Image (cartoon, rainbow, N blue to C red; front, side, top):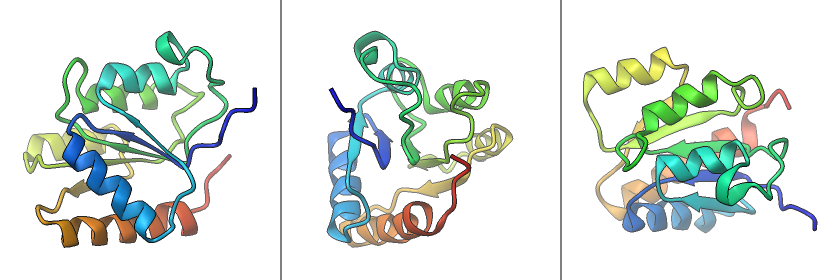
Length: 146
């Protein structure tokens, strides 16, 4: 079985926000594939290819991870911490996409070497424009080390 190459792993517990992110990215043809996981526990299983994602190859890394930080089971900052602590995946660009304006969340995310911290725009037009701008840079322009 050939595994598809994932452009973006979207880690988002809210259906509405996940749909907006996916629509915004697909609207501008910025991605071929996006996989969506709904909490931090599922994100870690996906990234490290274990549990319900044990069929995946850990070497088939997404080009980008969009990560909410306010999630059930395991929060996004802990997911980011585990990504950055593992040499196999620590170079995957991670962008926090969240509603949290808490200064402590922003500081902690940057201490953990997040690539960007983006506040989710409230209205649809702003959300799709944010996805377009983010996608243009991180998917099309940014050069990755792998």
